[in-house]
Amino acid sequence: MGIKLKIAAVGAVILGGYFLWDKEPQEEAVDTSYNGAYRFPDGKLVTISPSTATKMRVLHKNGDVQSLYHDGKGVFQAANGFRSKKTVATGSFVYSEKGLATGANWVEQGNSISVERVGLRHEEMMFQSGDLKLRGKLTLPEGEGPFPVVILIHGSESYSAVDYYALPYLLAANGIAGFKFDKRGTGQSEGEYTQHFPTLSGDVVAAAELLKARNDIDPERINLAGFSQGGWIAPLVAKQIDIQSIMVGFGCAVSVPREDRWGYVYQLLDKGFGEKEIAVADEMNEQLDAILESGDDAAWDRLFALRNKHIDDDWFRAIVGSDSLLGTVAGKATQSGAFLVPDFGWKLYFDWKRGDGPNFNRSYNPQETLEDITTPSLWLLAGEDSSIPTGETTEVLEALSKKGKPIEYKVYQGAEHGNVLFTTNEQGKRTYTGYAPEYLSDVVEWFKVQNDI
Image 1 (tube, one colour):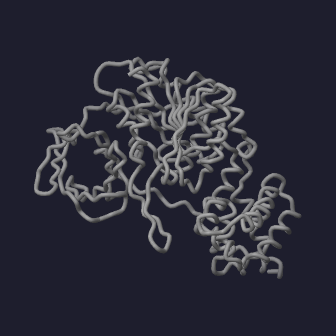
Image 2: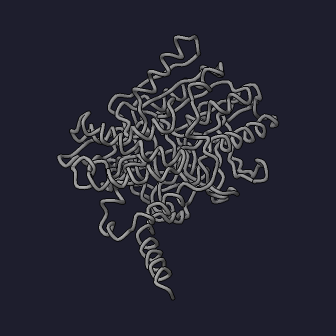
Image 3: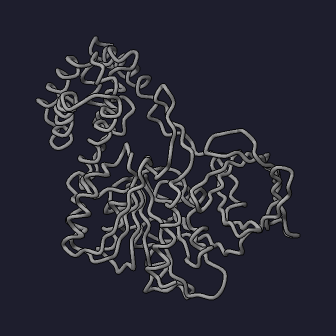
């Protein structure tokens, strides 16, 4: 073996080990037989869906969250919050003669409460989008249709929406059908995972056409709920087909590069840095943009020079873990063993992660799309969003509203991405406690008003 081949072989081993974390974890199997809406004797409505293989999430309409830790046999312990294990109630599910869960016995502070499962109707199906079959699930309200329907549009996550999403149950319990589907390359849907907006909007259009053909769905009342990345995709769908209304949860009305920048800007501001450090980070980020746009070798040289100059700066280490491409680069550059990776290795890794797909997303201007549609929309945004630039988004929405576009928005102060609330300890670590109190009610009421319910 020649010396160049030996160097290449050693480099491949280093790269393979160093970047091994990028392999996608396998999704664990979860029990979805309890999924649905449940009603307490006082009328309080909750939804239940999986969180992990041994934990279910109870979601209250007022934003409260509880975790049900279960043994797989119907017995559970309930704790308040997303991760707490401090038991506040115990219980067990009740089953019909056919073995289907019809409710639960809930025991709290010595009192036993009978919880009833709402009689929603669920139908799983496979539907066609181009050459692919995608897995969907329709949840219908009690009573006679045809019903309005809300199609849920994913964020960037790669897990199964059909298994985990709970909002369709809350909607159906309020008279509105809910439809969710595993986006391509996730769950039981065919194809490869992608974040290409036109491709994903085409899948939503296919779901809408499927629903329009059903007798139990009102084809004139097809609505969209787009979350995070889905906030970019929903308007693209409304540009292609008639949509009754759109709700965007913690989504974005600015471009992908602008959204990506906010990740490190937010983290720098949150950790006490200012405009001076942001300016240097922006200079480094500009080189990443140039590489993405043109693969410019000169930009690589400038990036490596800036990395070498600032790698020991406090601000550079402060952006590690931020929701940004630059934060990912900083994380890799400051990781133990980074000095073993040659510069050409970074280029190879970057090209591999970038892929060869069309670069529509970076050039997409969501404001132009919003100007082209007349679909009423409600934007429910987080005031402390570390991923989405809420301030810039509201500026765009205000400008569009002044032009006469039917756009409304609301900001939940103190909420993080996902419209979740949190507490922060002395070390700056956040503990997420539940959703903004009005968030879920705002979603339900918006769709009820838009669909005359």
